[in-house]
Amino acid sequence: MPETPSLPTLLATDGDGFVLDPEDLEAMRAERDHYEQPQAACIEALKIVQRRHGWVPDGAIPAVASALGLGVAEVEGVATFYSLIFRRPVGRHVILLCDSSSCFLCGFDALRAAVEERLAIGFGETTADGRFTLLPVCCLGACDGAPALMIDDDTFGPVAAGELDDLLEAYP
Amino acid sequence: MSAAVYHSRLRQSAEERRAETHPLTWRLREDGELVGLAEYLDKDGYGAVREALAGDPEAVIATMKTANVRGRGGAGFSAGTKWGLTLTGGDLPRGYLVCNADEMEPGTFKDRLLMEQLPHLLIEGMILAGFANRSRQGYVFLRGEYRRAARALGQAIDEAREAGWLGGDIGGSGFDFDIALHTGAGRYICGEETALINSLEGRRANPRAKPPFPGQSGAWGKPTVVNNVETLCNVPGVLRHGADWYQGLSGGLSEDGGTKLFGVSGRVARPGLWELPMGTPAAELLDRAGGLAGGRDLKAWLPGGASTGFLLPEHLALALDFDTIGRAGSRLGTGLMTVVPDDQPMPALLRNLETFFARESCGWCTPCREGLPWTVRLLEALERGEGEPGDLERLESLARDLGPGRTFCAHAPGAAMPLESALTHFREEFEAGIARPAPRPVGEEG
Image (spheres, chains in turn cyan, purple):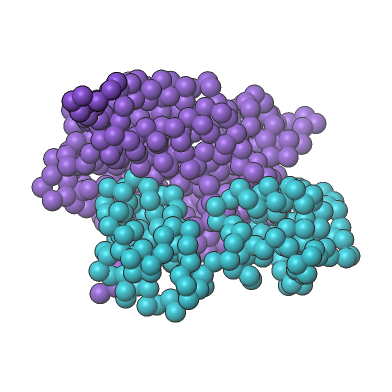
């Protein structure tokens, strides 16, 4: 791999006082080495921030930009494009409910209604106790298990409305 | 009772799957667990790499061209031809081999199986493709939600590197090549070849204009080959057993050779995945899925994802291959069929499909960014029975404006295909959504 710019010694912070965790900075540096140019590590860097904080606060944008030697606007542009980069706080657990065609044909509407009723939230919302955030997601590639959903790293399907209580129980 | 953890499975027993007839799946375990390096090596793993790397990259490309392995991501373009167009040699820098593992086409769940259970087959295919294209580095661009696949691939890449199948001087051939796993962060558009390259570079996933084609100037301006997971998984078999063997796999069912991971989802009795000869009749695939669930009749089917056109029950006799389905006015796409039962209203289904395309548009081109939300609004009105006279004509006009040649990439044309076909085959259902004007109360002024 060709030479890439060295990391600035001073890490950027902004008014929010956001400072990258040293371990996360190390992980970003390791990611950067997989590519010809540091910008390629930008999405993974945002995911690293998100793994630690649950979401990507505004203050993290200039910090990531500085860590990778990128413009703040470039990083902001990327951070606002991708659906799995969260720019607002989310609950402790994120539910991704597949709303694509096979799930739609196999009971998505009923499952959505059941989830929304059970948690008293709609798409894009977080429960009052900060436990769950509910989001739609495009085809999860589990169409032979439709309707399907993900909770954090786990994929479930087919999910019947009656199974929701037990399912959610596992995510305190 | 708690819902089942989803586990990708093939619905074919070990007896049915043989090395000579099922090159993609014969190594899969009956228990559906990961095939690690030791087991893969026991099952003739990396045999094609050992043979091919002793020879010439040109010979690999020639075999691939003769075999005519058509791209399994949905476009059906010959992988050998694509490789033959990649700029290599002379003073040119060595470029990149990118595996498109951003499986997100609605109704498609095939690459997940291969990556979760047989990651070494993909790695072997990537080494061979990298060798043919003289690539210096491979990337697997994997969608972020495929966590199990990420674990399997990460482990397999490490195993392969440790055993000398990746890294410098692979198998004493002098060829050096490594693979890095790149996981995405959502957005269907990342599966579009040039948008994928932008995303790999850490940019917004907007498509790029072609030409230059990625084979001329792709990732970081270097020659770049992008192939789908299943396409790459076909390569070891082709090189091990030859182009004639590959052609013969489809046993006269199709002019295209090889097998295909076909699947069925939607309202069928036994949704699933099968490795079958290219050109298998659609009716046979639907039979394997046990026909429709709940005693319903078939109304329509999508042959290979949301961006393919609807076909009818009368089309079930057709061979599932690129040219046959193309001649019927649709596309084979990913080859995983979505089944629509007779009690499903089409305006609602189209609203679901077009809402997906509208949300997933990257916003780069006006017809796509503006036309798709408008399409959704019209479909929502028709679904509620509140459509206006002229709405069907407006939808047809929108479908034309979304068609090929008006946008940078195939997202908008993909969205137009199910819409145009549904308006053709099920026009009366959409017409029924146009509100009849309420009778004017007597005596009211105009």
